[in-house]
Length: 242
Image (cartoon, rainbow, N blue to C red; front, side, top):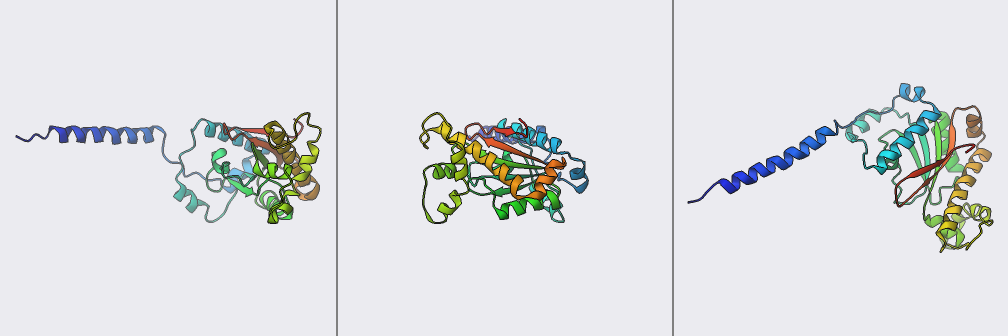
């Protein structure tokens, strides 16, 4: 005689599994559809924005990212944007900028180029982000094991990459006081050049963008450096005067 017990047990097991998944989602709260409004942005200070980036990175490290309703955020931001920060990052695919700072649609501007340097186009983009669109912080973020920095150290010559690397070469020159092997085989030397490249980029921003330099002088924005650790996901900030 056939029995229905295995089917009943399977049904109960599935109910338990899906019920547990539902409870887990509910315990984390509803999906966030919040976006930054003009009023929200106006109330922010450079210091509070920077702290928010730090807090977001801690959530990223702990795998505690905000659950977001992206379609709702897309719809809510279609009519305008009021980002809180401009992040200049390397092109590297291992540095997912929005996730690194736990940010959603409309929260931050992101500019990316291999070696996170600035030129006229990137400076214009930053000026738009800060002066026109109201962002309060500019972050120049380098990262561990940067391939563009390694290429600059090794004097790579290949197509347009050759010209691009001239923007990073000043950081290599700034690092010649390093006491050790000055090659890409030495990760400590590469890291030193990465840090100097961030510093050189910030110096270039202040020198070649009077608009941003004036905003920083007036306390309207902060311009800070950062270093992303590929092994841990941690961002270490280098703030002015520190």
